[in-house]
Image 1 (cartoon, rainbow, N blue to C red):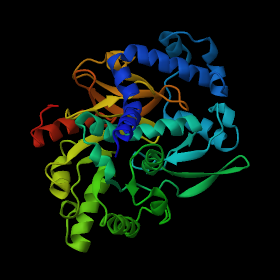
Image 2 (spheres, one colour):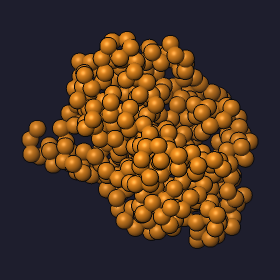
Image 3 (cartoon, rainbow, N blue to C red):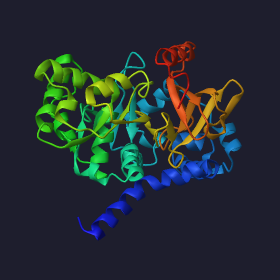
Image 4 (spheres, rainbow, N blue to C red):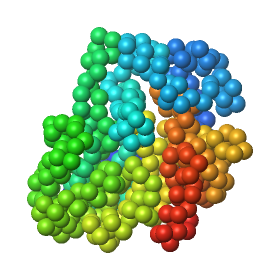
Amino acid sequence: MTEKQREEGLELLQSFVQPWHTAVAAPAEAQRKVLSTLLKGYAQTGYGKTHGAAQIETIDDYRRAFPVVTYEEYKPFIQRVMAGETELLLNEEPIGWAITRGTTGDESKFIPMTPTDLQMRVSAGRAMLNYVVSNGCYEVLEGANLNLNFPSVIGTVNVGARELEYGYSSGIYLKHVSAFTPIRSVPTQEEIDALGGSKSIRAWEARFELAYQKGKGEDVTMVGGVSPTAILFGRYLRRAHHVYPKDIWKVRVMTLGSVPGINTREEPALRALYGGSVAIREIYGATEGMFGQQRDNRRAWVPNYDQFFFEVQTRRGIKLLHEMKPCELGSLIVSTPVLARYKIGDMILAFRPPYFRCIGRDRWWTPLDYAWGEFMTLNLGRL
């Protein structure tokens, strides 16, 4: 690699992470800009026009005009979008659908995706790229990222007269990160998708075997995906091939999401399987968007203030996420290009700015479960 190529590569990496850092340094200003952009989009939709999006000038105006809404309350609108009334919630034509894995309810949630929404999903690569830039270890990107994600395409759904694909968000994130960043993944998302969308044990063993066969001849330096799946893959290798991932690869960094406690409860298993020196970076996202990622060795994530508008329902009322005090708890409310003031159902714990953790679903026992986990891991609230 020439010096010029190295400089161009560094500039590209910086372009992915710098907007995040800039917004974190001035969250109030960043959030005002994001809300202004979102309102322009909402003003072009039926839902936004009903709530007077075009006339809103301040955050207080927004709160008065738009109610906090759960998925169940949005569901009738989403069903109408699926029937062809796309302008009801969207200011762009949908190009696909993301679905949940059914882990937070009895059935999967369907979330429409627009071109703008898909561009934002590339932020799923920020944790990995920020690790490379912060540590100056650009050689990590010369290796491969082991893809242990769910399928990005598992079927089609009719939206009016159009037929659009739907799939799991983790696979969708990976597909777009691989397309728009220097991160190269094995197997490719298309190879995973070709195996089908079943969640059966046999289907997962087929995906794991594909990952092993495609990856065993590669210099795998990165692992990305869902944390429990990464653990299951390591155990599969031991059972099926009598090796651990650390016996085959020298993984430098893992960017993982989906469950609380990745840096505490899950850390011992991850290090035992992938190596004691592997850097673990948590990502916090959902089917609706990628909301934050771990920035450094402090074991908490930092919000994407440059992309989403964040509020929190606390005991003292609704406040902006960046206004939370250390040790304060609340239920997260996000505004995305598709969903305005959406109560996602996650409980957020604030540390000193700009660090947060999602400690679980918004249920009364979640703080107790979190406290027990901190005690059992001897973490006791430490970053």
